[in-house]
Image 1 (cartoon, one colour):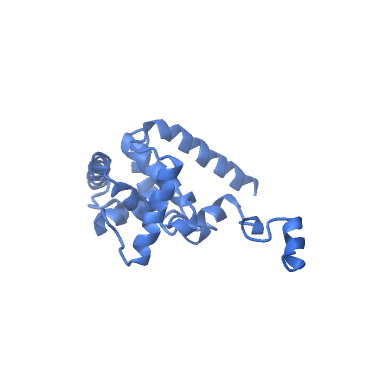
Image 2 (spheres, one colour):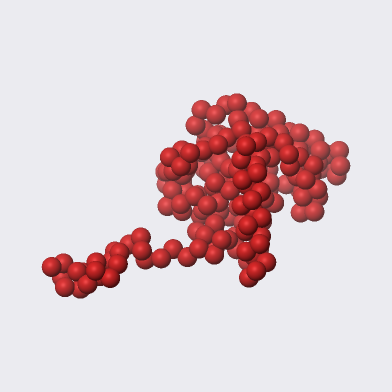
Length: 194
């Protein structure tokens, strides 16, 4: 349990240090709007709006190295790429181009170092090696920021699928968000609302 707590702290600390380098910084209303659009797209059967299938797979592989699955689901299972796609669809052409250029660079590095044309084809150790090489770039800071935002967004808005982010940090949603809200509310309901 102590190891998980330290890992969570390290994750949050690294995210805070990435924030100033990220090309995208979202306010809480922007995150909620993106989550809402993501959820609606899923209901409407729209898989991705901006990213192509190959791009989405590559970005999903990167997000899985940022928050990998272990006892809890990782960023891929949490739908971080769908959240990312929704954010990028919101008139963010410059940021989308930055991510596409960064992905091409990463794929070039994968080819040079490991003779693979896709980052997603590498094993975890090889992927980590390449990501360490670019961890101070604006590209990586932006991917990391969007991964974390997508991982911990509210599940009902399309991020944090299945509460995967909640599981990661050990948060258990309590009944405090649903009636009865407290002792007096419960008593009131038990008396038939009188």
